[in-house]
Length: 108
Image (cartoon, rainbow, N blue to C red):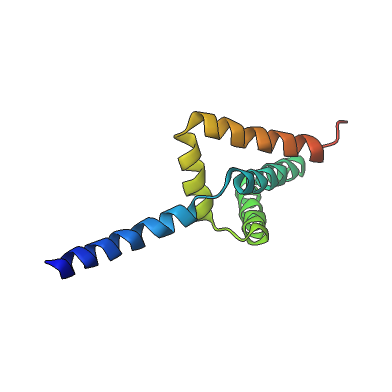
């Protein structure tokens, strides 16, 4: 019985740890999303004829963004979903995105 409890405890600890690591901080997620929004805007400005071509280009750029920030799509998606479930946290995170975009985008 003790052995079963110990194994169950170890299994639960192992399951909990990766999920905590998969959720990015507000600041980290905000930086990733800022770069994604900037990339989307640049691709839209190019007026690429085919939406399929634009999507392929965006996916390639997105992979580069993930590599730059040392994250993967699963971390980004899970983090985004976690913040969506906490509206105050989500708004704080997106305020960081907005602030960063304001710094990087020059008015015309």
